[in-house]
Image (tube, rainbow, N blue to C red; front, side):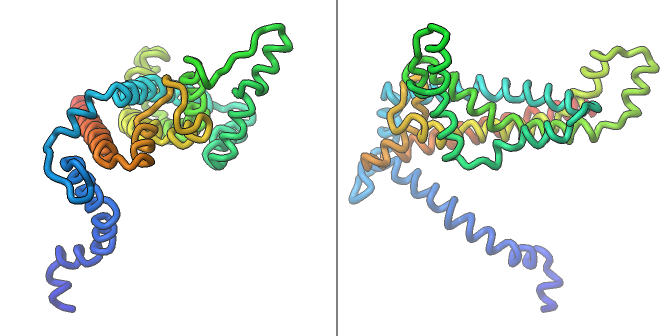
Length: 288
């Protein structure tokens, strides 16, 4: 065992080997095989076609529609989620009655099974659901929420309902780590509440906000489960996402389009995350 103690790098590699092997078997190798199949015209005895599958994919109006819907959903939900979560965190950071109860209630959607969530939202927004029953009782015409442009707003409400509590707790932890001495010193120097919020709260919440932003983007891609269970394989065109497209390509055994779409989405996510890391480092350096 002396040679292991003398070589810390090899010792660390031996401890990391199980995790590295699992990462390679379940992530790295399948990802490489998927990229290989995206360059072939068939997964069985196929020939190399290069980027032809990607050109066909980008020229497919259904894929473009799914990409636009996914981008629009993320562009609306992520900032809205962060703003509401930050506002609630700042509110619950004060001494309020039943503060602990409110914190727990906002976290409750995280522990509710997806199937139960779908049943609740179906009961609310179905054509014969609760909301349409209320509208009918007020003399208004029922609305088919999931088969119209309103389906996107329903999906946004479900996303916010499910994810605001988690982000609120993260922001709340960041707020409680800011020393009160900073606010007292700023108040003595004549800084108002808004100036304190801008120059102290937002500055010290930058790492937390960055993490919340990344997690919000990831969670926006996870909304396929709820969308699929609520609206099925072929929902309204306003909520037809990239995951729907890839799921349908898998069912039709079109592996070339499936792997090409999956690889493009992975590249976009990685580039977005790397860009956010660069921006966050520059902000941290400027603040330091």
